[in-house]
Length: 531
Ligand code: CA
Image (cartoon, rainbow, N blue to C red; front, side):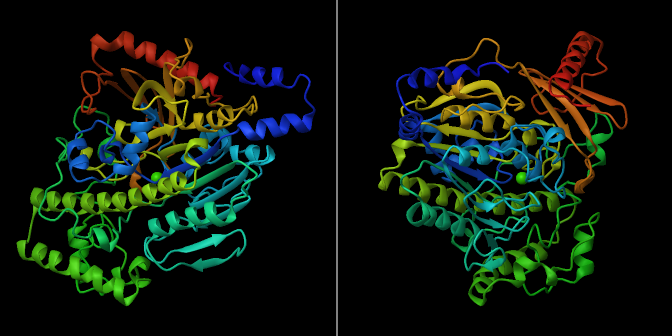
């Protein structure tokens, strides 16, 4: 590890001061951290990021509040995860380590809550720490003075929460993103110890599947079509067999009932019909879909008012083939975008509280999501792959008086960097075994000469959607993926083929690149102690 000499300055400060005075001085200087996090938020649906949908997202004002953080801070254009799935990303963020080191490789694992985390370190250094919202690590939070988290994935409507005080499920009335926003403000307003700096995690469930919008946005995108990606009907030619073997296509696998909401809360569509429309997925009986069961009469009424006529029109059209896939794409993506809009409202609400309560200037605000997501690219929804849409994740940081407004950073950063960055920013030295690097120099607009030129990726194929295990390396231009259980490789030239439609692995012109990238992968495996 280098770039860890940031505490030298603090060492100078200690001359002539008692430890108590030093602590007071350090406390007075330490900024608050507000870490706003979402789940499955793609770059394509975040207005501040350049993408095929940027104009559409901006035109319909889907993320104005998150975009404002970018306009006031630093947006990382090349931000990546190490393992593109919910729980493992959170584990890497908390520990600053890749999945194979922190032990949380796939959803369904249980996070070893005894290990070091950034929250524990901040707590030890007198920060007041709290997490509100989606946790999804299989064990209850540790290192937090206070928590109020969703069990597992959580629900959009009238969700249950587990708090440190209750230690049992307590149902909250309302819409999940609004509840998380309100609880975040309530914590700041009533539970915050004003004598301490805080580390507050406001971690949203949205826009995770099953994309249940808030009623205030049911009609948001009426009468418009979301732009389609040019590879919505990808045939997976020109690559290894891996991409063709998954089970995450909008055409065959998205659930017509729970994902696309063709069935209203009181099921009227026969189960056989649902199975016919979702041929390769064993549909859940829609009547038992818990999201619908927990709705109030008012919520159900609002739901039916929007979805029942929409579904009647859909049935009347009797769509087949590509037209049916296109309809599912619009239905899925509109619900997904509407969930983001309600989440963004709550980002705005919390930021407004900071401003109104004179906390803005002393608070570092981070916005990120646990990974990116496929919005129809390659015909998919979901994540997991090392391909761009799910490898990338949004990362935006505003640090008053430090970050230059509207900065866009092109250096390669990864979610293992968040823990050391947070500690570095507040003057705490992270333990040596942390694998990430502090982004503080980048936030200050300085690129260290030895900044990383590549990132390591691993996916453990043990969850749903039949995505097989793989690992790989990405540089600014190239990406090498190893499907090691089948000894198959893919190489992409992202400059020439940004949509990753054709592997160059067997192209004679690329053999020296293949060789260099294999060497780089080997080096990263050694550096990060993989195997
Ligand atoms: Ca996720």
